[in-house]
Image (cartoon, rainbow, N blue to C red):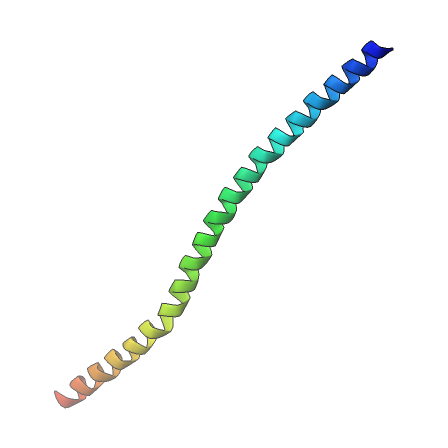
Length: 73
C-alpha cells in the first residue's frame, strides 16, 4: 500500500511538473504574440495620426495647382 501511495505521489509530481512547463511555454508564445500585435497597433495608430496631415497638405497642393493653372490660361 505504501508503494502505491509513493508511486501515485511521484506520478502526480511528474504530471504537475509537465503541466507547469507546458503552461510556461504557452505563456511565452502568448507574450510574444501580444508584443507583435502591440507593435502593429502602434504602427497603425501612427499612420492614422499622420494621414489627416497628408490629406491637408494634398488639399493645399491641389489648391495651389488650380491657382497656377488658372493663372496660365
